[in-house]
Structure formats: structure tokens, C-alpha cells
Amino acid sequence: MNIWDLEKRAVRRLRDGLGKPVDPAVVATVAILRLLGFTTTGSCSGHADRLLAPYVDFRSATNADDRQHIEEAPDPATRRRRKNQTIQRNAAELGRLVSLLERFYDDGAVPYRQRLICQGFGLIGYRLTTQDADLVTVASKDERRELVKRQRHEFDAFTAFLKAEFFGTKDDAPSRAA
Image (cartoon, rainbow, N blue to C red; front, side, top):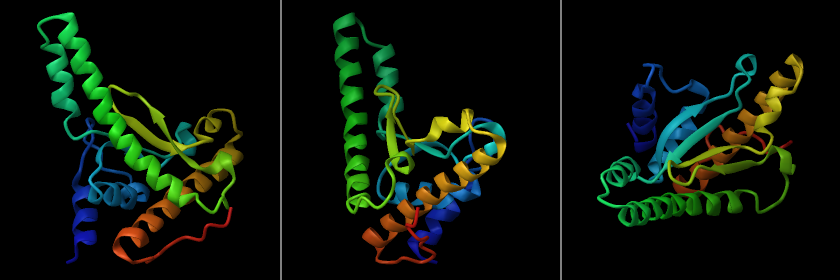
């Protein structure tokens, strides 16, 4: 079994705080990000019925320990310094992912509202989602279904891009047509 299949298998075994597995439609995205060294902390493939757009949360590998050290700081100056260091480590991960997104969107073929973006949470990490993620809350039921489908497609296209870029394969690569 190759590294790609092993990582997808490992992702399928992950469980969230409620004991639920990673949504099947986002397993490949989580797997490729993990193979590229990103620490993922949560994900969702999007659910039109629950008003959720697809996302993958990520942060620095040391974030949990960093945040514990902030709490244990002996004084406000040390706490502030540790907090800034934690934010910088997370921002470094953000920079790595934004660089990949820039290359992915280099051709400009995808409408802006459909593009993947990173939402910032600085101290606790970041979220990869779509520009139009919040529109699921105001769209009609039929529009939501189509919107989430289109958002998932964008995640699939980004995943295929990353696989092709770093592993030289475009297996099951979706079309970039909008």
C-alpha cells in the first residue's frame, strides 16, 4: 500500500470530540494536507440541511502545548510574549497554505466567490473554507444544496491540484469548470 492510501486510511480512523469520523467527502483533502505537514484539527464536508459549508481547520503542530504555556505564564509580559509566539507559529502555517492557494488560483479561472480562503483565528489556528461559505445560511433549500455541491467540488479540485503538484498524480481529478 502506498503512502497516499495509508494516510487516507489513517484519516478515516480519526474521531472528533463526539466520536464521529471525518466526513468521507473531505477525507482526501485532510489526508493531503496532513501529508504536506499541516496539523488538521477539524473538518466538515458541508451539509446543506445543517447550514454548514465545507471546511478544514489547521494550526501549528505545537499549538496545544503553546496555549498551555500561555496559561502557565508567571506574569502578563511572559503571557503576552508566549501569545505572540503562538500567533506567529500559526501564521507561518497560514502562509504555507496561502502560497499553495495562490498557485492553485494562478490562472484565475474560478469566480472569486467560489474560491477557497483561510479565515483567521490567530491564537487557535485557521480555517480553510470557501469565500461564499456563509451564504448557506441565507440560501433557499435548493440553492443550499447546489452551493454546498459547488463548494465541495472546489475542495476536490484543490486536493487534486495538491496531489498532482506533490505526488505527480491526477487520479480522479475533477474538472475546474465553474
